[in-house]
Image (tube, rainbow, N blue to C red):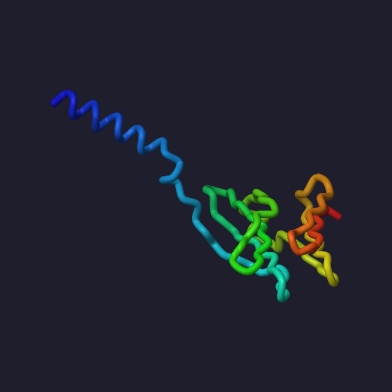
Length: 117
């Protein structure tokens, strides 16, 4: 009886510590840019109290590439977090939380610029 109790207790502790049991709550997907070659999208996830994760992706046919991820709080999630503008082959994503300007180029040659200006 004592062995069963110890085994059960250890099993419960193990399962409690497994991160695969903590699933992030998916909220929505937004398409930033869409053309014949690729889409640029971002997905919102609720990570816990006052914490959200935003993943940016480049999607070409059935292949998706994660460009970057960004964490925000509840106040930023409920406001208009990102200001997005685009020209022919360039997308500019503005947010006051970006500390420095980054430039990414997708597989299809589209420039993604992250800036706080």
